[in-house]
Length: 129
Image (cartoon, rainbow, N blue to C red; front, side):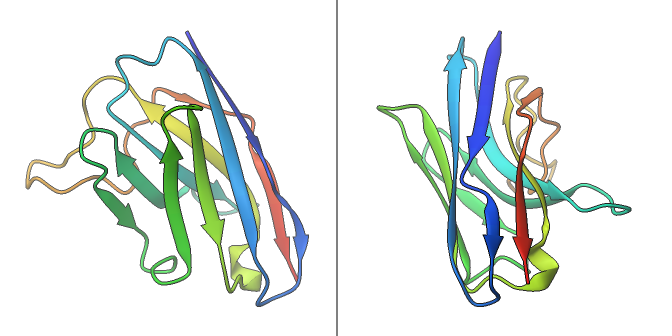
């Protein structure tokens, strides 16, 4: 069983920065990839960034490229999302997820932006005005 707890969200003005954190605990030895996704009211779930644990390959949504950075602290089992230059359209509930079934890559060999996460947290709200 895996537990994920997100934090770091809040209200910020456009152009500002936030760093989201996700503490992962429990049985994590079968985790293949992790990532952040978001969902705004009335909108579909959207992948923001993902990272493959073996090698650290990353993938970003076009909307996040150049502004957001996904990193992980293996020693502390924490996943981060550094958000710079935030925009009102970044307003959403942000979730971190882990994928433990090995479905991190597409048939074409690309890291999925939004893998079929097997576990995720309760989310942290980001509001940009």
